[in-house]
Image (cartoon, rainbow, N blue to C red):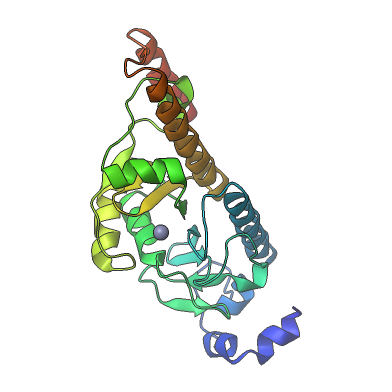
Length: 248
Ligand SMILES: [Zn+2]
């Protein structure tokens, strides 16, 4: 789509008033929304959406992605779209109250949930939400997988969080997931799915892959024996040190 089409779109025009956004360089929302930096991030969201869909982490229109792009600005995926087939012009821009500022399509209904984490944990610059089957199965059981079984999970996930069920898209869900997300970068959402955060969208997505792979592997191992071998002290302390070094 050309930028001319953007101007003709009434939804975008409505948001493209000469409002300044405090980005530090006097850019309007529309200028920012179409800037090379944001277009590159939009492409990243499409790419990660495709990877999530290909790995069967999402189905139907499930899952959503967000990236914080300013003090009061979050780029997000739209609602009612397969995450495997998004185009960069489908993306939306919202403020931290979830109000849509730019984009032709309607924002994901889960934007508030992601923002709930961003408000509680300043290090969370991007979030990834999906329904990968193994991790979601643990969430449905209301259980977290056991700790200290693989170095990767200890280093990149640490303790996995568990948030109580609240209606998706509501401020109550945002508050509950934000409460747990403050201290956990991967959260199993009971009766729902998984949300992960990172300092950028790639890191948030890696955590989604790691939590799903961990839950799947533990599930298979538990069918071999209920008595799994765990990494013991002092090796667990080594992993903690590596985690602190890699993710200060
Ligand atoms: Zn969901």
